[in-house]
Figure 1 (cartoon, helix red, strand yellow):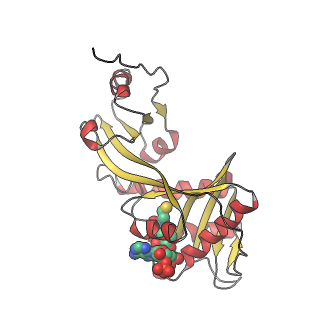
Figure 2 (tube, protein in one colour):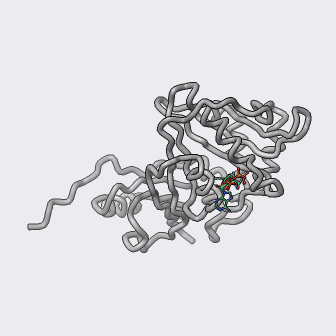
Figure 3 (cartoon, helix red, strand yellow):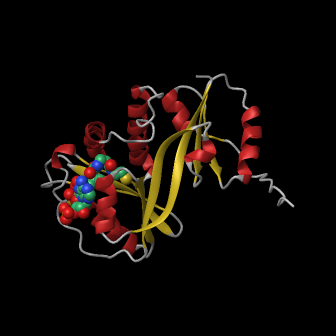
Length: 240
Ligand SMILES: CC(C)(COP(=O)(O)OP(=O)(O)OC[C@H]1O[C@@H](n2cnc3c(N)ncnc32)[C@H](O)[C@@H]1OP(=O)(O)O)[C@@H](O)C(=O)NCCC(=O)NCCS
């Protein structure tokens, strides 16, 4: 006898207003726990009335199970159970409002692989807007703490990390180092500042990146982070 299919009444297409704002048309986000969710998902899709929309699907299932959507990225969440509270070097400063533009410039020059940039069906302007609004939101209060790396207090930032404090952990929401200055230890120093912040709160530290981002994965592994979860992210374009 076939095992009964489990219905998932919780399966909802959640409006993703942040992505929608960058795209200029509706966007939805859904988490598919397993194959049992696929039928419920197809039903939910039928109830969408938008002539054009993007549905972002996050799941541990592989591409063979979601052949109706486009695999955009394999993401890995790294975690550190016992972050160390080492003294933060003198090149690390808490961000000031005037650092925002420099951080935006760093992202524009150095970040080329965000989820939106990895989808050729999304106009490049929307991908850049996605990164820009993300950083602006961090400076507007999304981030609990933003650290910048500066060669000296009066120089411009060369890298930054934005951290969010959650109930039992801290997330590195964004980290970027100017492309001309990568490979010099700045990312590692910023991550040490993130560790010390999490350690001061007695919380775990998490950071998510893409499997193909070898620099970022190499950095987190070298700092003793373990892989906690892997998720695949798919885009389903409706009406295109
Ligand atoms: C990821 C990033 C922040 C790393 O910053 P960085 O200043 O270049 O990193 P560091 O110089 O401190 O490197 C620290 C460690 O990372 C690892 N690393 C760096 N480059 C690497 C590469 N090409 N491959 C594998 N590991 C690498 C090494 O372990 C290195 O330690 P080592 O120099 O002692 O060997 C930077 O590359 C960046 O801004 N990339 C674009 C934005 C981005 O992808 N952000 C991460 C998204 S979560």
